[in-house]
Every structure is written in C-alpha cells, then in structure tokens.
Length: 84
Image (cartoon, helix red, strand yellow):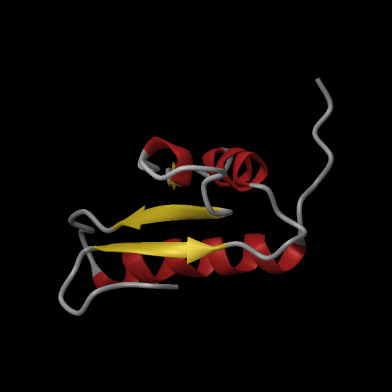
C-alpha cells in the first residue's frame, strides 16, 4: 500500500494473480467499493495493477478495521472464477 502521510487515500498494488476488475468485483460482492487505477491514470501505457482505497467517515474504528480485514482476506483467498 502506498499512501502519503495524513492522506485518506491509498493505492493498493495487487499481487499478479489478481486483476483490477477481479478485485473490484469481488469486493463489490462484499459491499466494499474501491476504484480501479484506470479511472485516475493519466499516464501513457497501461495503468498499474492497483486499486484506490479512499477512507470516508466510518462510524467506528471497528467498522474501518472490519472493512480493511475483508479486503486483506479477499486478497489472500485469491480470485474466484465468476460464472455468468
């Protein structure tokens, strides 16, 4: 995770087994919204394999912790095949 000190935004670089679309979808299924890097990419070439984490105003520290733990658990489980 890359973040400037004091920022409420961080970039989470994904392991090679994940694509941005896979993680965005997997987290959406768990009611967690992250932004794909291509939305913010102004550079040339391919955007990084990363998502943007923006911390709003969680009601409690426990709520924030639970959300971050869900992201970590989802990443550690690896992408699931999605059937249409």
